[in-house]
Image 1 (cartoon, one colour):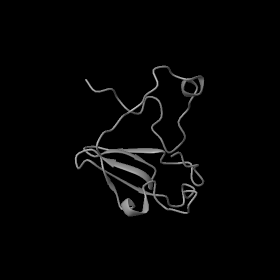
Image 2 (cartoon, rainbow, N blue to C red):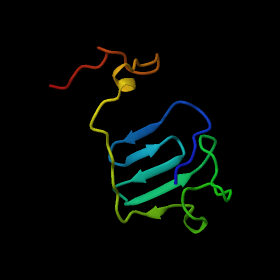
Image 3 (cartoon, rainbow, N blue to C red):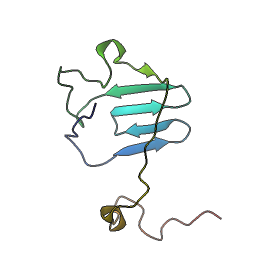
Length: 100
């Protein structure tokens, strides 16, 4: 299910070490170590067509056990990504040193 984003432009994907990806402060949160996923469609996303406030069925609204997880990545950098410039709240070019 793909839900339209309705509020806020920040925090698209949050990646906490040792946990897993999280889409916004609500939306979808994957905890790889616990093999669980949670969802709460708060102010950042539209509700489901049936009015539900989770990506999961009402019976599973508090979370779901992960059986499998697939990750899809792009292999090519888009023109938009190539011309991206960070805003004032993000690391600027040269502010972060490469690890040696």
